[in-house]
Image (cartoon, rainbow, N blue to C red; front, side, top):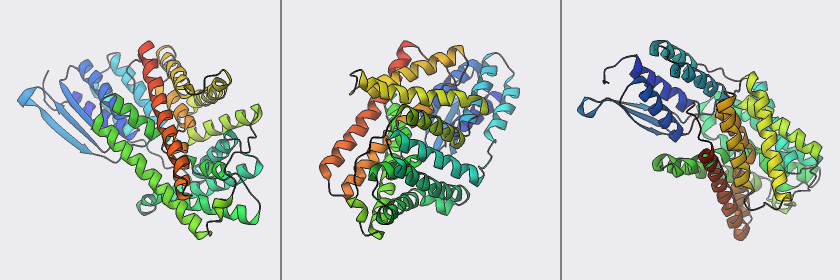
Amino acid sequence: MDALRDDRSELLLVLARGLHQAGLPTDTIEQTLRDVALTLGVILQVNVLPTSITLAVGAGFAQQLVIVRLEPGQLHLRKLALLDGVLGTLRSGADPAAVLAEIAAVDTVERPDPVPITIGAYAMLSCGTALLLGGARNEVVVSTLGGIAIGAIAALAQRSRRVSRVYEISAAFVATVIVALWERFIGPIALYVAIIAGVVQLLPGYSLTTALSELANRNLVSGTSRLGGVLVTLLSLGCGFALGAGLTGNAIFNGPTVSPGHVTPLTTTAAAVLMALAIAMMLHARYRDLGWIVASCGATIALARTLPLLGITQTAPFATAFAIGLLATLAARYLRIPPPIVLVPSLLVLVPGSLSYESFLYVFQADATDALSLAVRALLAAILIVAGFLTSQLLAPAERHA
């Protein structure tokens, strides 16, 4: 073992950057790098944060230290799947130099989404979420319009740093204005169904559960920073809502706040398919993984709907996450399906972030009691989801994948 700059140390650095930019949680990145270093025969200490990577290769005073400053990673299922395949070849004894070239190629794969694809994905996700929340025809139409508008803003944000800095505020503002105008000139709608379905792409449910998972794995700095990012996102969305409500004369606060409850097996199935397709498009999944993403979304929704009927209400998020985590582990072990292909869509469908955002809406209505209640429910749901995934790993420990 040594600290010389060779293909092995370069491989670790390129792999760390690739996993980070593909959106993998920091604790998973660190464990993957330690496993790869052991395979390569390299002494490694690693510290990964949402905006940086620190690698120390070698022992004692012979260490070589590398610090890389990065932008926060964005989920990219195609990259994660490709990196998982490359790591499989490394474990089978492939030459580090060849693996280094493959990982470097994966790390540079970045094709900006065409504007119609971005807008279509956002519209489908909003439409599917409205159906899942029990929205009637008006709620579905308004939510889809909001998704189209936010998709257009997202397309601009991908191409302009100035727009990306005010993305959440602008998106929440536009969605609120669309809902308020519909309510004023066309007819009443379920307020929270329409708004939450419209901005579901921005809700930090995945970030919240990832932060809690990192904290549970003792990645305290990373988990705390992610929680701060969740709060900033919610504050931005709340600010956008307040601006939109103020522009429209606060008339939006007079609308009904409950779901109309139009949930049928047909609408639930349609919601699962639409949300799965949208998630696959937004997270750049491979075509071969589309079926697994649809199955993951469908299974998650089915479990979330069925468990309360069986009397499992308070612990339904835990039981759902446990079942999906167990299935993801078994699928990775026996079918060689990268775990994020199954886990990420299920987390996005559970969306504990929606309750967090709804609590902010209640704050602007001066309803502190309901706001606090919903915020606590969102936090408990996220904790139960993380606990479910961690417990599933106790029964069926996952193999080390990207």
